[in-house]
Amino acid sequence: MPLCFKLILAGPGVIVVGLGVAMWYGSARWSRTTSSQVQKLTEVAAQQQPALVGFQDFDELPAPVAKYLRFALREGQPTVRSVRLRRVGELRGIGEQEWSPYQATQFIGAGRPGFVWDANIRMGLMRIRVRDSYVVGKAAGRVSLFSIVTLADQQDTAELNSGALHRYLAELVWMPTAFLPGQGVTWTPMDTTTALATITDAGTTVSLEFRFNEAGEVASIYTPARYAVVDGGYQQMPWAGHMRRYEERDGMRIPIEAEVEWHLPTERFPVWKGTITEVSYNLVR
Image (cartoon, rainbow, N blue to C red; front, top):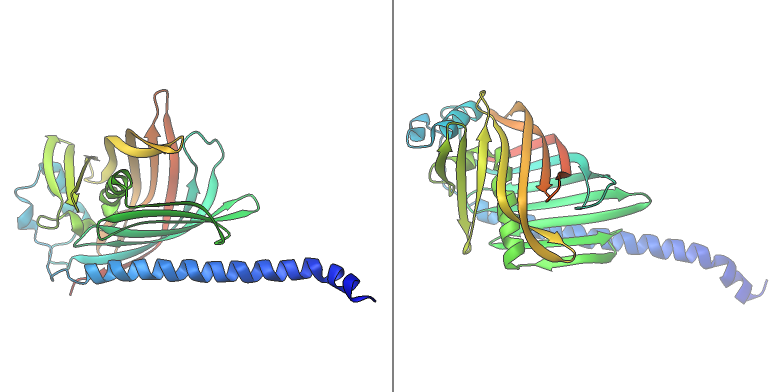
């Protein structure tokens, strides 16, 4: 058989092998970058000084916050340096009707705000990788097709940093010792079941309303103005989260299920829902 025909017949196989190699390389590079960001987060969290939970420290907090911390924590337990979460769930963009399943690993650090969220999303035959992060005062968001083709890449804008800090503050329900006095979150009473949490980092300040139920759980969070990406630009819109099914992990009661929504002019539009499948805490000893 002439060489040219052999090459033609071999062409599809060469393409498949080449694509496989490209995907392997892209995935390895993605993992290295994620590991590097997690390492930075870990180094910052490692600077946190040892501390124990003391219920007497709650006396100056708003009543619903003090009740929540007594519900979520145990007297004398060590504070958390960082946590690794594994989640499964579904997500979609604003205005989209179809949900896409995802699996994600997230690292959240204490001491100074920080997180790294690494997700695999299935959209039909496509596999999308998403990495959102906030490390040392800078947020970043990257979206890739099959870990090869970059679909979106944003870094360190005022809007992105603000949105990431809102997210960090909401997700401290999975690391409740970060709500303790002296850990960086300040509380302002609003009513008997609501308190305003505020946090500042790298010149950015954000606040969230935390709403508590009769059991002492954080039932929901809300802000009238978090930055969302709309039509390729940023727009501030009301944003809320709902937490449920609290279970004990390493002596802390945390929500196992959660859902997030944007409040559009005509409706409340859920965009994310997830279930915790694994929790691993790194405690300050």
